[in-house]
Image 1 (tube, rainbow, N blue to C red):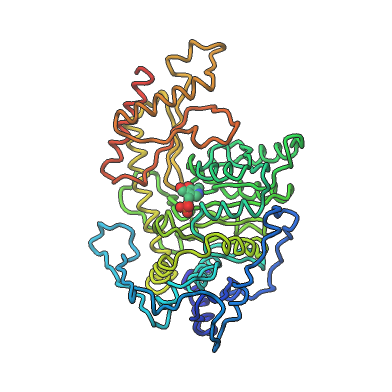
Image 2 (cartoon, rainbow, N blue to C red):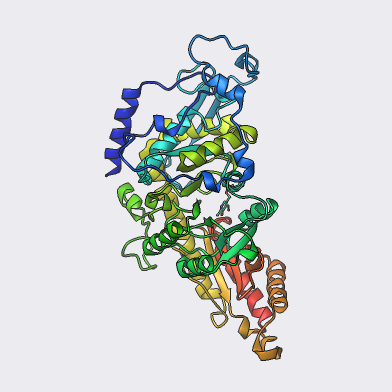
Length: 512
Ligand SMILES: Cc1ncc(COP(=O)(O)O)c(C=O)c1O
């Protein structure tokens, strides 16, 4: 369906439903906002047998449940939500950009957005009060519509819920599913923040082999088929970053995704689809890497070029998709959303009630004013499209700099199709120390030592890179020397200088 047609359906539903509730922290859920009727798709399978001991004991807060009924003409003497009369802010005024990501664009038009005490849509007094843990109806409605438009989950009882970003969402989800001592299946190299969360909860990791299209289904299947129960319970949580993977930049193609999903069904796995780089898709049909002009797509083309998410493939409700605003709007919002079957999302809401409570009101207002009132669904897609083109240009600049300045005899990389990272693999066998080792093999200690020396030389030359070993699951031997470079953090004009400095450090270490 074209985006304009989907938006027309959303508008129709909104006018049928009438205005959103405007009391404090109203109970809300995605079901209220889905365009498609319930009961037209299969239901998710049950996950009771996979819940952790901790999450089985979790109860919904009686105070929060009581305030669900707090609608209409009721005098609340029950919950300690201070009256907005005493909040020292009367108005929040924000200026936002048009939907073109580049600030250098002369035609850039900004819009003024304000949120007042006493306004009808999303009152500042309500936004600054306690909120319900799924998020405000205003933001959850937008998120639900967005999920339905982009991913259209193929089962009935899916729900979305706002989060305080993916880091927090992962922490909560692992608590829902895992007991201390359990193992989580992860890619052979994975986001170091998630490794930190996993280890902090007393969990282990099992690394699955990868190639340039990400996690290898054969290795996943084999490790599960041959799981030795002396090592502990067979793992059933599979954590993946399927698009523009952090750190390798790999994007799984559709065949790969379908095969991994098939194996997940075979072994009854629950998939955590951590996908912050999904919208930073840099694939452009017919583009050979040399066209200099801007390649921003038509919004419908842009959506069609996006990978098929696991959420879109998920017929059994075994995927929790984790989205964040960190890489597409701003990390300081500390906001994102999860989408999965209602059994797991409801547990997530109960955890949020005893932890984060709800994403911060000012962040929710900023999202609502920008996404719903100012840009609308089409505007958001235009923004994502334009942002992905910015990253496409940055990626190409960095790839060109790598070709020009890195010693090609000792290193190689793949051009990432999405995300923010280039993963440079350095041939350790070309290192001067290589010949001095037994059987010509470098020990782990030596590899780590060389990696450390390169890192140090980079710093001395004035460039910061990330070591491959930071992204290794526990017990995973370092097989290569790898470095993660990002084209997201520095200004465009210094990217190539950064690569020159990295090249200098490599040449010095390899005595070239
Ligand atoms: C794969 C992955 N997951 C999660 C995060 C953290 O996201 P958030 O800022 O939403 O906590 C990052 C940040 O780099 C990431 O790369």
